[in-house]
Every structure is written in C-alpha cells, then in structure tokens.
Length: 61
Image (cartoon, rainbow, N blue to C red; front, side, top):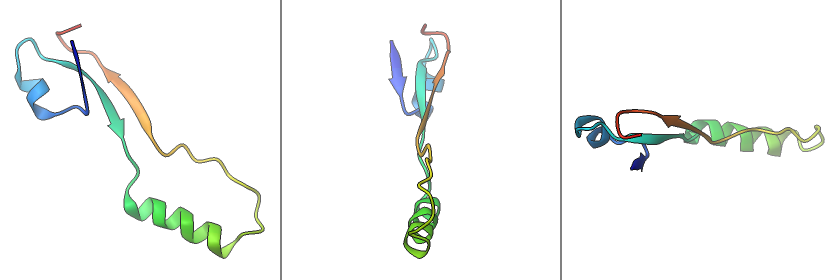
C-alpha cells in the first residue's frame, strides 16, 4: 500500500506508509515566471520543471 502527498498520518501509522511526495511551486514563483514572460516576450523560450515527485519508502513497501 502506498499513499500520496506525504500526509502526517502516513508517518504515524504502523507500519509506516510509503508515499509519493509531490512538490508544488509557490504562487510567488509562478507569478515571477509570468511577470518575466510578459515583460520580456522576445526572449528565447525557457523550460521550467514546476512539479517534482519523489517516492518515499517506508515500512509498507
């Protein structure tokens, strides 16, 4: 069994629940990217990885 979101309850259960930790960008970061795109529309297109996921192995695997 595996959880998603790395909720605290998954760390408290026994056996501790493995999970997928999802890292989301902050609103400030997204706003900064949008501001840059609007202010500098002629610049080359850049790629930004905005979400990352990581498996966290615990006792339930």
